[in-house]
Amino acid sequence: MDRRNFINASVLSGLGITLTSFIPDSKQRKVKSIRGTFSQTDNKYSIYTKAKITPAHIFHITDTHLSIDDERGIPYQEFSKRMAGAYKSNTHFQTGEKYSTRQSFEMTLELAKKEKVDFLALTGDIFSFPSEAAVEWVLQKLKDTGIPFAYVAGNHDWHYEGMKGSSQQLRATWTGKHLKPMYQGNNPLYATYNFRGVRYVCIDDSTYEILPEQLDFFKEQVKRNDPFVLLMHIPLYMPGRSMGFGCANPGWGEESDRNFEIERREKWRKNGHTKITMNFYDAVFNAPNLLTVLAGHTHHQSLDIKNRIPQIVSAHNATGYYADIRIDNLP
Ligand SMILES: [Fe+2]
Image 1 (tube, protein in one colour):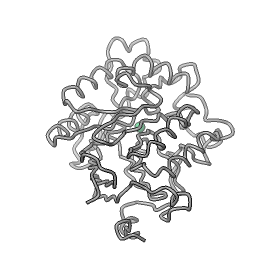
Image 2 (spheres, protein in one colour):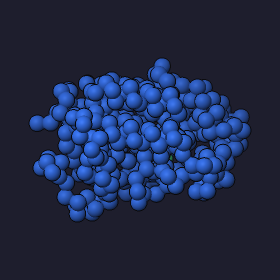
Image 3 (spheres, helix red, strand yellow):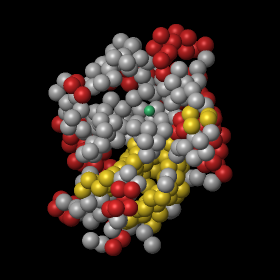
């Protein structure tokens, strides 16, 4: 094994990290990877690529669960009530002090500004429900930092609990209406944001599933053969992890859905994941130009590695958590 790619397994297990498959499969050997090495200390990550890029310092922010609302939200209160009452007081991940979600988000952005962060990757559940007031507030806060950002939705961002319609329909409705400005003119389901030689590829998997057009779009990104980072809300399946790692999880489906009643939503698909979602999983973990996956949803920090590709899951920003990531050229 290449010395650069060697990570001590016992150190990783102490950090709550699982090595799923550390040996590249035969498919991987055919195309030369442009990944370099990566390292982690607490919430700080360094990711290196063999491709020539301009180094960037990014913050990964996910699951703030803001519930800011105003009179425009009154007609929707029947659907937003439960989540509006959640995450009222949150223990900061470093200081142990109590903060509101609004304060946590503001503190994170202030730090990003102070540290001259270049790019913000927002991977969903920034909102607990699609409140127009919250979207306006977030956009103003982001604008005030002057830092470019990419956003992809989580399962709560577009969800008004108990509202009629399938998850796919509700996502289309509320990403198109209230969340629209968050996408900066891009397609809510799939988009790329180019920054300093790295593409930040957003794929909305907030229904846990991947649509055929999203798989096609993803394959196009792989073909381009320059380095990219994949932004999604729901982490991809890792053996031994919880159902929170639900995208392409073979155990996912109607029978394993425990929360459809409390969240008042459509049950997960009867026969589990579609072939498209499973094909997406294979495409991700065989992409020679994918530097890392960034996801949220579980509200816990974790790092898994499959076919040498890291999947970084960040804890919820409701607690002030953010991942501090440097993307750089391999020295
Ligand atoms: Fe969340």
